Amino acid sequence: MTLSTKILLGMVLGVILGALLNVLSASEGSFAANLAAWLINSVFDVIGKIFIASLKLLVVPLVFVSLVCGASAMGVNARMGQMAAKTLGLYLLTTAIAVTLALAFANIIDPGMGIEMSSASTYEAKPAPSVKEVLINIFPTNPVKAMAEGNMLQIIVFAILMGVAVTHSGEKGQNVLNFFESFNEVVMTMVSFLMHLAPYGVFCLLAKLFSELGISAIADLAKYFFTVVLVLLVHGLVVYMTLFKALTRLSPLTLLKNVRPAMLFAFSTSSSSATIPVTMNVAERRIGIDNSIASFTVPLGATINMDGTAIMQGVATVFIAQAFNIDISLGGYIAVILTATLASVGTAGVPGVGLITLALVLQQVGLPVEGIALIIGVDRLLDMMRTAVNVTGDCMVSTVVARSEGLLDETIFSEVSDRDEYQATEP
Ligand code: ASP
Image (cartoon, helix red, strand yellow):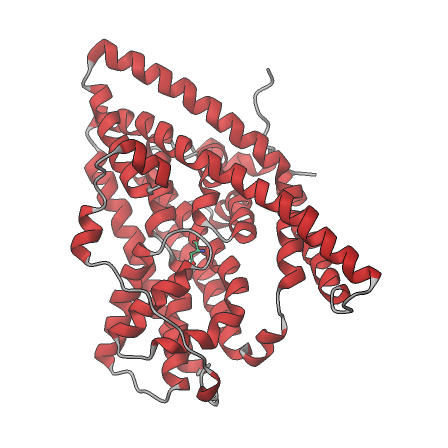
C-alpha cells in the first residue's frame, strides 16, 4: 500500500468511527457513552493534538532553513524579483477567479433564498488592521520574535535577506550555506518520519472531529453548503487543471496525483500553515520543483493564497445578502472580488480564520456582520475542504512558476506517482 492510500484509509476509518462515537455518546450516562467519551478525550484528542504539534514544530525551521538555501541559489542568478512577481501575480489572479466563480454560481443557485433571518444570533466582528500596519508588519524587527510567533511573512523576509547575503559573502558565506544545506536535509528527513505516522495521526484527528460534528446543521444549510462544495470542486478540478495545462503543457492528472498527500493533510488538519512541511516535501520530492522555487512559493502560498477561502467568502456574501434581502449592486460585486482577494491574503493558514476575515468583505459592501452566525454551523467541514483547495492552488502555482523558470524536474514530475517518495534515506 502506498502512503497516500494508507492516509486515505486512516481518514475514512476515522470518519466512520467518529460518526459511530457520535451516536454512542448520545445515550448519556451509559457504559457505551462513557467509553466513547474516554476514547475521544483521552485517546484521540491526545494523539491528534500531538500529531498537529509535531507538524507545526517543523514549519518554522523548515521554512527558514530551506529559504536561506533557496534564496542564495536564486541570488546567484538574480532572478528572485522576476520569480516573486510571477508567483504573486498568479496567486492573486487565481484567487480573483475563485471569488468571481463563487459569485456567479451563488447567483445562479440562490442559496440564501427562503432563509429566515430572525434565527441569526449576534456575531462580533474584530477590527481589521489598516493596510499601512499590514505593510510595515511584513518587516521584522527581531528575527527570533518572528520565529517564536511563527510570523511567516517576517520569516520569509529575513530568510531571503540572509540567503542573498550568503551569496555575497564569498568563502565564509559558502561555509554557512553548506551548514544550511545539511540542516535542510535533516529537517526534510524529520518530515519524512512524520509522514509515516500520518495515517494514525489523521485517523485520530478525524475520529475526534466527527464524534463532535453536528451533521444536522448541514440539512438546514444544504443549499449554501453544497454551493460552496460545488464551486470548490469546479475551481480545483476545472479551473486549476485548465490553467495548468495551458501554462505548462504538462498532464494535470499527474499533478493531481502528486499533490494528493498534501491535499489529504490539508483536509485533515484544516491548516495550510501546519501542512507546509508536507507541501514542501510534495513540491520538491514528488512534483520535482527545485528548492530555490518551492522554498519561497510554498510558505508564501500557505500564508497569502487562499482560493478555497475566497470561494466560501464569495458564496457566503451572496447567501447573507439574500437572507437579509439586501441587493448587491454591480459595483458591490466588484468590491467583493477585490476585498475577498485581499482578505484571502490576510487570512492566516489556520483553522477557521476565513470566517473571521469574511467580516471584512461583508463590511465592505454594507452587509450585516451578524450574518456570519448563520453559517458557522457548517463551517468546520467546509474549512477542511477549502484548505485542501488552498494547498492545491499553492502547488499548482509553484509548479507553473518552476516550469517557466526552467526549474522543474520533469522526470520526477512524471514518474514519482508510482514510487513511494517518503522513504527516508536509509542510515
Ligand atoms: N483553514 C484555512 C487554511 O488554513 C483558512 C480558512 O479558510 O479558514 O487555509
